[in-house]
Amino acid sequence: MKKLTKLKTKPNLQESRLKENIEILDQIRADAVNDIESLTEDFQHMTLVAESVQRNYRALLAENQLLKGTLLSIIDECGCGPGNRCDRCWKILKTLGIANPEEKPDAATKYRSILSQLRNLE
Image 1 (cartoon, rainbow, N blue to C red):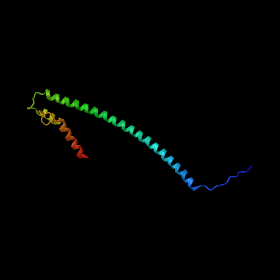
Image 2: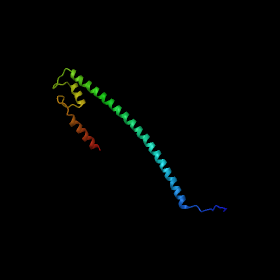
Image 3: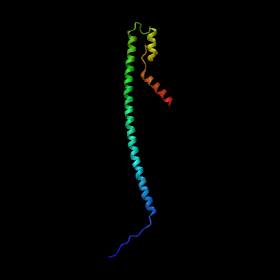
Image 4: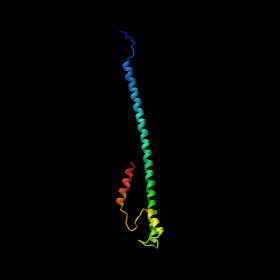
């Protein structure tokens, strides 16, 4: 039977570089997975924050609508009449943004005006 001897070979430089590249790629992939997990957690947190802001804004709108209704009922219960409003009622109407109380505000025009103002801010 033949005896096999182990031959000592010189380390292959190309092979060691390939192995290093494989290890680096594995590390990059692991880092990418960690980054994606972190981003997922960040998006979940931002979603919770956005939902909270939305709830708070809806509550604020409801309170504003209630306040507006209360102020308008004060005007309706006042002894002054349309076209002959007292100073207090005029102040309330101006505060509510109704320039001419006999005219109903055009919501579409008001909305377009607000949009154009917002676009000018950009």
